[in-house]
Length: 269
Image 1 (tube, rainbow, N blue to C red):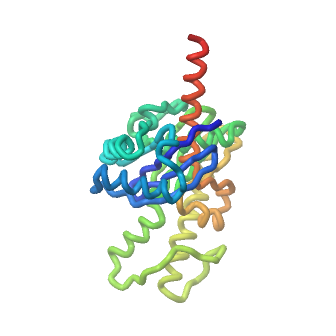
Image 2: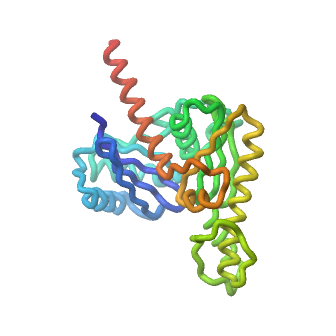
Image 3: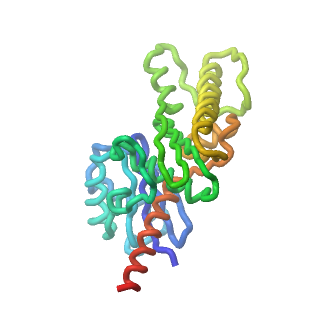
């Protein structure tokens, strides 16, 4: 039987929280607030667990990947006081079993490594992988065999839209959601921006995936994740496999792998 877990993907803009009970997960998205206190965070988590119908004492552990270091001690304190279970961070507490070939391995965000490993577990028989994660930034992470080769970082679609808005006095408030499947000559500003960003990013993703794939052992599969992945998959020829919860999947599998190793060690002792 799988342990009940509280999973955290702490990003620069939002924090995704997964409540995993018996392998069934409910997911929530909260704003990442570096100015909050451990008490405010802990009380919000209690409200979240109440909404999910889960008693805090039923949780075995909290498992996290964070790219906002200032929040790490707040999360530890909040979980200790209000939930009563430890927080395990990847890779500090949960090593990620990938060969990290970054020039300075510590520069790679935990989110990128966890997602890369989860993609490898998702597609174990493909020689090479590119993971495209649509968040505050769009990241491209390359995996060949069991080695993390590195990747690319590009501003995300919403980041690009906000940058454009900050420099344009008359820019209308727009959504990037579109039913169109290809760009067209647009006859109003909002649609022009929407098509420009959505199809511009799709062309960028397709072009970079093609070029990166040529440099790795083939065949190469692509896994897309992040909040904008489904929208981009509709208009991109390279994003066939969309896994919105890829990072939370990885955190859960890392915890299970550690538990299996502990059980094996106890049997051998």
